[in-house]
Image (cartoon, rainbow over all chains, first blue to last red; front, side, top):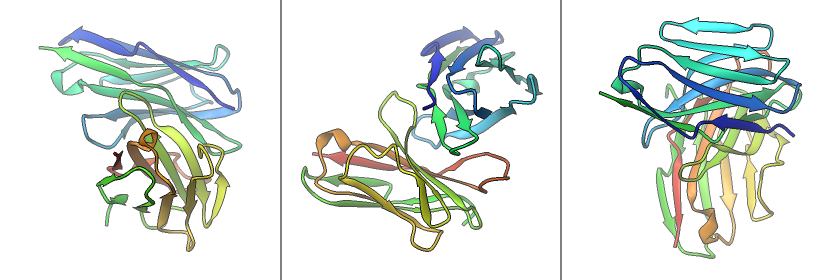
Length: 112
Length: 115
């Protein structure tokens, strides 16, 4: 089955700097890759996603890139702000089983 | 309601007891998922429903765990003979289903503590 690995587990950046979180997946049948942000004690919420027919997608300060050949995808946050501090999860959707497999999460801390 | 609703939000029980956790998905969403999230970990897949049937229950850890969705809407996760290792936040999520956007909409979760 699908396996998703996520790095780093924790990341501290200065306010205004960029943050990059990387994930790899194992199943080439996966075709949808969402990123979720989870604040302490809250539900995970989708912040950006990408499908396998696209290499990059951007939404204001957030972007996601996908390399299907290498089976990895990354989240890029530019001009980080304190409110970006949260745990971020990547996930992969297996198009055959409709099962979403999540990474282990990255705790991002933006230092003011 | 506008979002996914889960009850109870908090459940404290004793080892060996039976527990039911309820999920009310977004109206019209055919796909419903249960995940378990332990402290500092990502959501761990338990089971996926498409309509009334369990399309994939490969994530249920053992036969103490069971879930139903009899009318294709509300779902109940049932845990028998609870163990301390079952303590976690149980997240429910719904999605429009095959052909939809793919976005999972999560509930706030049910925090289960087994003493």
